[in-house]
Structures are given as C-alpha cells and as structure tokens.
Image 1 (tube, rainbow, N blue to C red):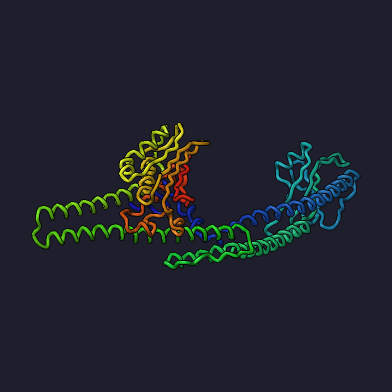
Image 2: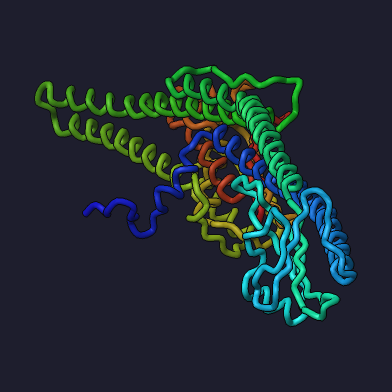
Length: 466
C-alpha cells in the first residue's frame, strides 16, 4: 500500500529531510556558506541598527525632556507655551479632555484613558505615536506629566516632538544595510562556489578517471600532482596504491585460474585417455587392473588438489583457528614420523633441534605445514634434513633445511605463490600448492614464511606468534 502524500514509511526519513543529501556537494557547500553568512550578516546588521537606533533615541529623548521641562516651567509661570520647530503640546484636564493645544495636535488626543489616569496619579508618561513603517509624516515622541497652574487648576501637560528625522535616518540605514548585506551574501556565495569547485575539481577528475577504470581499462592511474601534499593529493596517492593492489590481485587471480585449469586439465585428460584405451578393445583382467590403478592415481591427484585448494580457502580467514597449548618437541616428532620410513629407505637422516617448550598454536594446521616442508626436502634434495624448532619471546621459529641444490634464483621471489613450481620440479608429481599452503598457515597465525638458499642447500623458515 502506497503511503499518502507527505507521509513516510516507518523508519524512513521524510522526503523534505532527505532532499539535502541528494544535492551535489558543491551546491550543499554553497548553501552552507550562504546560511552561515546570512546569520553573520543578520547579526551584524542587527547590532549596527541597534547601536544607531540607541544613539538617535537618546538624543530624541533628551530633546523631548528639555522641551517638556521648558513647557512645565512656562505653564507654572503663567506664560503662554512656546516650543521649537517640530514641537507640539497639549493640555488635558483630569478627564482627558483637551483644554489647550498647539495647531499640530489640536484635535488628536495624544494619551489613552489609562495613560491619563496614570498621569493624574502622578506617573510620568512616555509614548511614541506612529511607527517606523509604513511611512507616516505625523510620528511623535511625547512626555506627559501633571502640572498645577497658577489658577490652582491641575492639568496634564503633554510635550511632543516629531520623529521624522529619526525615522528617516533609520529607514535609510535599513535600506543601506540590506543592500550591503545582499551584495556581501552574493559575493560570499560566489567565492564559496568557486572555492568549492576548485577544491572538488581533483575529485571530479578522479571520478572521470575511475570511470575509465570501471570500463575495464588497465594500467590507468589517477593524475596526482607531485608538488603538493594536501588531503586530496594524499587521497590520490592512496587510491593509486589501491589500484596497484587491485590490478595485482586481478593478475594473480587470472594466473591462478589459468594454473588451476591447467592442473585440473592434466589429470582429467589422463583419465579420459586411460578410459578410452580400456574401452577401445576387450582387455584382460591384468590390463584392467593396471588401468584402474592408473585411474585411481589420477583420481587421488584430483582429490589432493581439491583438498589443497579447500585448505587454502579455509586459511584465508582466522575464525577457524583453534589455538591450544602444545608441547613443541611432540609436535615436531608427530610431523616427521610419517616420513621416517621413506628417509630410511633412501638412506636419509633427520636432525632435530627442538628444546622443551609449550607453544600456543593450532596443531591442525601447523603439523601438516611442517610435514609439507619435510616432504619437499625428501623429494627435491639429498643428504641430511635439519629441523629446528624453538620458542623465544612468544614467537615460534620453525626451519627445515636440506643439503640439496637449493632453489633456482628466479623461483625465490614467487616461491609461496599458488601453482608456482621450480622448473626442475615440474616433471615430478605435485601441484605447486605446498609452499603456498605453508605461507597461508603462517599468515593465518599472524606470522610469516621465508625461503632462502644456504651454503648447503635450501631452507624454509616460519615465524609465528605463540
């Protein structure tokens, strides 16, 4: 059901409140500057107007007080009232009736009945007649007070002066302030607009360049000036580094897919060939047995490859880790135990340096990682295999070194990449995921893996916080 006009669905902002969020940033900045300047100009205008109005009112009040004092003295002396230009007077009886008045106010009562009563009681009355707007030529400011005449009659003497000059000055001041504030607001808005455009210009250029990247263009980077070091420049450098990492990740993903396809295609092609040959003509039981053994070997290769890929995927996070306190010598012994028969058959030996220590690791992953290094040393080297395992400063150091020919120099920089194998080992069984698995185990524990050549052979080391 569609909500009626002006209504909003529960939990959603009203449209009028969400409108500013949909405006361009430049327009929002200009509106913010305009609003802030409006407040500042409004406050400045009010302050100037108040100060000028106060000064004019003080002068007018002083003039009214002087005229009123003169009028009272004249009435007490029994002389006819007189006053300066623009002045007026009224004499009212205690009922508010006009007894005597100047020509300007001879018919208009200047005091209301309540004010007459207050004056009769002895109060001094101050009053303005007419407002600043709209224009009125007969605006007055008056002062009234009771006075006793020489003939012993009590009257209310009202002294008034025209406010025309004062009101005209204030109206002119308002007009000038309004024009000045309007021009200042326009200038500030224009400056704010140009400043915002200049500040956000690099962002727009980044957006246009990013749009070309989104279209699939590779090798494109954001234009970042080298002679600046402001926020936008640092943003540009950060985005370029991010693009470098994204492009490297994309290239790595393409290589991974190509290598995985190649590694999967080979055993599948062999399986298909074995089955085609077996089905080509009737086979003896011995021949079928040989075919099944070959098929079984290729299936096992596919299973091992799939398991290795699944393990690498699981190791991409750390939520799966289950660290437990583990005896380090027992961990090393359990990892190399399955390979002792193979080493004995090949007349190979292990040397183990694992002082007593308790380490906090996930043996489910550390043990196969160490086993993987031992298996590689058995397959690709000769002589004694040295295993060192020590715990120091809450860090586990694992090293497996052999006495073989070592790693090819061009293989070391990519030794821990997936499906990467040294040229000498490409003809031997394996998927190129062993060292990648070892590096993933170290990374999942917050550690690192390192491969190098020593003067005796190859060595792979792990440093893992424990």
